Image (tube, rainbow, N blue to C red; front, side, top):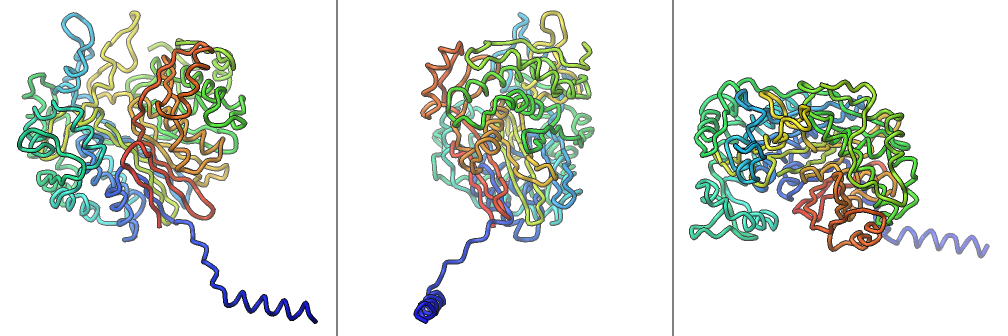
Amino acid sequence: MKSSRLLGVALLLLTLVRVPAVQAAPQSMVAAAHPLAVDAGLEMLRRGGTAVDAAIAVQMVLGVVEPQASGIGGGGFLLHYDGAGHAITVYDGRETAPAGASPTMFLAPDGKPLGYREAVVSGMSVGVPGVMAMLELAHREKGKLAWSELFGPAIAAARDGFPVSSRLAAWLQRIPALREEQAIRETYFNADGSPRKLGDSITNPALADTMGLIASRGARVMYEGPIAAEMIDRVRSHPRPGTLSAADLADYKPIKREPVCGPYRAWVVCGMPPPSSGGIAILQVLGLIQPFDIQRDAPNDLRAVHLIAEASRLAFADRDRYVADPAFVDVPVAGLLSPAYLAERRKLMSPDRSMGPVGPGIPPGYVERGTSHISIVDRWGNAVSFTTTIEAPFGAHMMVRGFLLNNELTDFSPRPELDGKPVANRVQPGKRPRSSMSPTFVLDRDGRLVAALGSAGGARIIGDTLQALIGLLDWDLSAQAAVDLPRVINLNGATELEEGTPIADQAAALRALGHEVQVRRHEGGLTAIRRSGDGWEGGADPRRDGAARGE
């Protein structure tokens, strides 16, 4: 009797106590390199838009508030995951070399490669921009909202003004030569020539007008008519002119490709095929390290750092030898990813000694012959992993109608031959330069999306994305924790450790294993989304101005 009364009292107390409701996991998520861009993406999702709709709005805002990294004058690669059918669609919006490009265009008269500034800040470096044509194609196939609706937040930010972020302020301070371009000076510098500072307001009415035209008339206004003519004139009238022509712009077409996918433990990892080297390199490294059971190591343990660096070294040796635009080079993708080939390359790896710089292997089937990342999941489970770029910070340092022109052609090899053999990534008319952009999806064995991620950062994109994948899959880290991981990078040279982080403490031990080690600042640029219960969680790189939010 007594126990019955106690139970009744307990039940009564429970009815009187307000138990906090468990907060539902977000059913949609946007992760990008600037909070205003994330806001724009979430706004489109609230209106009933898809992940592609949101990605376009995010990219347009990034072009306004993060002009040093991406914009409508550049290119990108976009992976789309269909939540209903589990299919992945690959959109290639990489820039192309003009018809007048030549294999020796980046060589000085003495036959040596041009200096950095001579090559980058030039009309020669500008490729045909591809991002707008690509996004229009993706929208036509995967969008729900009206095309014009997606430009509203970006046009408002450009016309009404936006506060300078810490990263934009740092780049303006770091590159005073930007003031030599009048339109850049008038937009991003004060009247006395000093750069705009953190929190200052910037407007870009010319870009607002350009985006308004694209919103109302479509992407073709970038490729035909007055905007195209102005781009051509700007490139060809530069003191170091390029050959961009009306035909080059009018002929540009985005390409749909098949993803490269491979197994890793309990998952399937899918990434970007050539002309990007990212998907192949990441799958190679994962295949090389899989037998070492790296999940038993802590993220900053010496063994893990050493093995990631050594496997990356092997992948970069193959990347530099074999990967280029598949329309011009027969890339041995299957051979580079075959288990037998990776097993043979793995024999070069030692758990207690570095191999040092290494040459490429010979895969079966081979016959001799400024960047930003956006990750989005919508309410239907559709996802976008989209890496977008104008190459170097502020591209070619040339502004047309409020947007910056890319310097993407400097991603080609400046030397057309090496040891008497043609370089796969040499300059050729109409060719798409090799990229390291690595938009990536992780699926479970039933084809359901587990994660979407990618990074900015030039050739270091591959290492950043790889390490975040290992964090998610081997160490079961949250999206934010995987993005936060201290970085170890190897491009088949020195092993780079991120300064000011615990991983830098491994420098001496790595040198004892034979590594050349550099402890250096790391720019980062990752965004990631991973499944969390019946919803999603996101992460954005703290090394930049990014954010990840869901609803």
